[in-house]
Structure formats: structure tokens, C-alpha cells
Image (cartoon, rainbow, N blue to C red; front, side, top):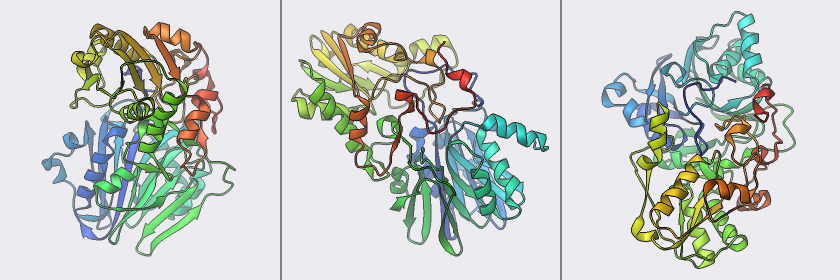
Length: 473
């Protein structure tokens, strides 16, 4: 695993990536379709964006650092030709440094001609695969696992891209939802556990694949179904064909934090509405962990729905306590410590008129480090809140994640060796309560999937090859 070296860990979890692909029945400006799809997936990554277009047996691409509209100004769009297949990617780095070299899609010429690959997830055996490929004279231009994925596919392809993907996937360990493009095919791949989401849609005669259904909505496509764990979908002139990987595990293990935090509230993943899951989390918090208070509010944006669910059950009025600066991204990468200290006041401010003299319940989706939560509690108290009770829509995070969430060591986790009472004391809150694991799973009962709960239990579907990173520090 190649960890970012130039960014400090944040209190909340950071997104991994978003992928999008379109196969059109005719040559047109498919880059614009991908652009709108990526715009809808911007919440999944705000470091870099890229689009690759297939046309006339060639692939042209453009990628850059920044948000989708920043990267794809009109002049940059002019470099992308009309075509019939295109893929795109938005990135937040969980492996590999934040650098233009590591932006995706990865585009190269291989045994099947021109190929482009975009990846959401994190391989846990990147180091051993990379070393093996280097011994076989492979040369790498980036530090990301996505280039390793591309090299492995090329290694086994022998002119047949499906063969290359099937054989390469036998060696991949970890989470991966892929869109792969040749000059004639669009291919969607989801890992055997289904850890990261991937959906299929249609728009007239066009096929669309994306990380979330909200991206289908953004381009006027109709949701068809989710790509199944261990499934490889091939879309070409013959239509759509489905292939299954061999020796699939007995149970899926989707990342439950897609529902808690990562996915957009208007998305539906594996049959479960993200909005309903979050609202149910708030309801359960109110039913099981109620407290006398004057108002309830949510930390924007992902906890607002849950806070309304809490209000609905408790009868305590929902009132906005925090105003968010809509022009600051969710990750808001700061270059130095002094700016990190001021980041919260740039992103949020307390609404003094709403909370002064009030007993307040503040609902949040999760707590990782606790630094931001501590500042929020202080901000609310400074604005006049008489009491601050914190309610969290997930269990205590006790273990790091190596499957695509940016929390790598125990030292980053406020809950690794603390209970609720101790955490409340650190935050300066009057009380704090978390959902139990069973409660959280109950919020996602509509899902067709089983879940990875490793950050709560320490049991993961795929162990990491770098176990030394996950010891107590």
C-alpha cells in the first residue's frame, strides 16, 4: 500500500473515488455525458478528475487536479473528440500521493491495443503484485494501485481483454469497482465481496455504469440493476454479456459506510435507499438514546437526514445549529498545520440566534479522530448552547480500514481504546451515544448485501499484507 505522505488525517473519513462509463449506440460528444456523471459523483473525490474517450481505434484523454468544473473548462473539453465510448474518474487518494501523475483514468497501449482503466477501491496486496511485475520488467509511472490493476490485466490478456480481466482478478485482493475501456468495449467489474458499489443504467440505446444511482439520474439514465459481486459486464456491439468470477466467497461484504457517509442521500445501493437508511439511524438513536433537550440538529451535510429522523421520533424540533460554507469541498485539503487549525471555521459556523441558551442534541454520521467533533462542540458552546449532547449514526470506530477508507492506524482513532464516557470527556460534550453494530445493520435492512464491519470488529473480508500498519501506536 502506498500511503499519502503530504496530507494529515481528518476527523471524518475521506472518500475514496467515483467511476463512470458510457457506451453509446452512435458517435457523439460522450465526454459531456461523463462530465455530468462525474459532477454527480463529485462528493466521492475532489482531488482530481479525468475523462478518456474512444474513437477511430484510438483513445484520447484529459485529466487534472481539482474539481470537475475546474478541470474541464471549455478549452480542455475541446481536446476530447466525439466518440462512442468514454469513462471518467474522480479521485480522493487513499493510496498514492496527491499528484497529477496519479490522476485517473490510467491510459496505456497494451496487448489489446489502447486501454483505459478507472478504479474505485483499494487492493491490499498491491506491494507484492507490484514487486512481482517489476521482476517481470514492468515499468510504473505512478504510485497507485490502479496502475498495478491495469498492468495485471494487460499481462494476462494475450489479445483478449476479458481473459486478462478474469485472470487478473484471481490475484487481486481487496476492494475494486472498475470501468475498463478498449476502443470497442466498455467493461464493468465488481470485486467478489462487492465492497464498493457499482450500478448499471440505460439511456435509450446507451449503457451507463457508475458508482452510484445519483450519477444515472444526472444524465437522464434509467437504473437497471446493481453489478453483482464478482460480476464482469462486457458491453460492445453485440450488446451486454455477463460473466462471473470463479470461487466466489459465500457472503458479500459491502462497506456499510457507503450508507453512513460516502454515498449521496439520493442514491440507492443494492436495493437500499441511502436516505432511508440515514433517517432510520436517527430514529433508532431517538428511540434508544433519547435525552431531554430543546432542539436537535445535524452536522451538515450527511447527518442532516438522520437528525430529522431523530426529531421525528423524539418530538424535539429540528433547528439548524451549524451553517456550512457551500463553496468548500467535503475534503478541503489544507497544505499546512496552521491552515488545518482554521479549516473548521472556514467550513462551518454556529447559528448563535438558534442555539443560545438551548439544550442541544447534535447528530453526526461518525467520529474518526475526534478533532473536528471537539471543535464543533466548542463552537456550539461558544455560541451559547447550554448543553451539547452528541449522537452518532454508527458504532465506535475501533479499528483502521485498509479497503478504501482513509483511516490507516489506531493512533488516528479516538475510539480505539476509549468508551463513550471517555470520548464525551475528550470532546467536551455533556453526553455521547453511538448506534450499536446491530442497530446500524438494521438501518440497511433493505439491502441485498451482507456488510464489512471490520472497523468496528477488526474482522475484514481481506486481510492486509501490511499488518504492521494496523497495530496500536
